[in-house]
Image: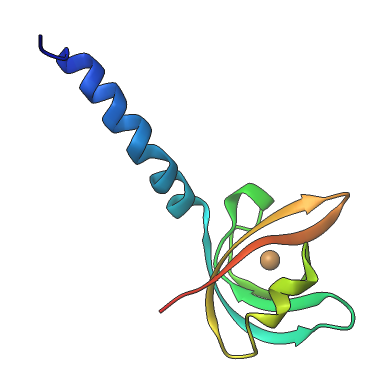
Length: 98
Ligand SMILES: [Cu+2]
């Protein structure tokens, strides 16, 4: 008995797509300031099409989880994701880039 090629292709796509999607949605940036007491982080970032930012800029984001701010410091290069949460621009994910 052999597994149909179409099924193998479907399995391969399922395994592959989450990583591809995650990579394409992260935004390149650099931390310029961390204000842990206010729960804010200032990031110099590139264009963010989904938030209508066609050009790079430096701006303050709210951190979704205050713990995020302990993993980065001013000067760090990061990849991050941001969204508008209750009308506030919020960082939902941060990864240090190498
Ligand atoms: Cu911006």
